[in-house]
Amino acid sequence: MNRRRMVAASLAAAGLAHLAKPRPLAAQGTALPLTPACEGDARVTRRQTEGPFFRPASPAKRDLRGDGSGDMLVLSGFVLTPQCRPVPGARVNLWHADADGEYDRSGFRFRGHQFTDDAGRYQFITRVPGLYPGRTRHFHVKVQAGRGPVLTTQLYFPDEPRNARDGIFDRALLMEIRPADGGRLGRFDFVIPA
Ligand code: FE
Image 1 (cartoon, rainbow, N blue to C red):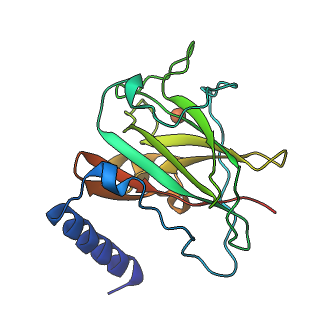
Image 2 (spheres, rainbow, N blue to C red):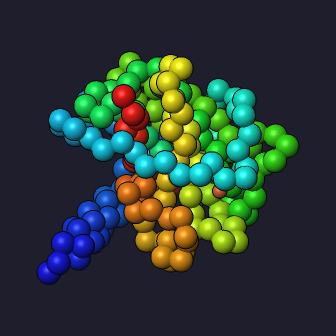
Image 3 (cartoon, protein in one colour):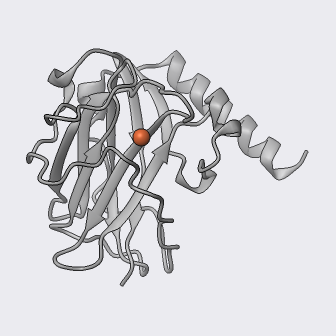
């Protein structure tokens, strides 16, 4: 079995295990450990275009559920240095399409930012973004520590049929997604340049 198949098989098994034993999202949503799993060096997260729908000055907001309908998704992770040290107080800015694949171009629905906690963790509670022509399913993110450089990128969902046909899709930017009671849990750790 090649490596990709093995990874796929073990992920599928893990997914099934979680399907069999769902825990409430509310209980899992804050379950991020206090320290990141990586050791030593981590690779800086790849940059991607911000796209045409970025709007500056988003509100400080981590719970975007009220901005529309759709399946709930809790997205969490760390912001880390290349030496795998958590970065407290980093600004994480999230924006994405609504369930119909539309961006709010005049207001701030499904747009918000927050700062990582003392352990370098961020968390958003939101809805699964819808699809729009030409793209696979994705989130847009900007991450910045202090007045440092802004890391602009996008996050992707595994097992999306459109991933294979999206010209800017990058599997290095796949979230780890697990089903949970009431929605899905997404996990992605950002590594920002030193
Ligand atoms: Fe987009």
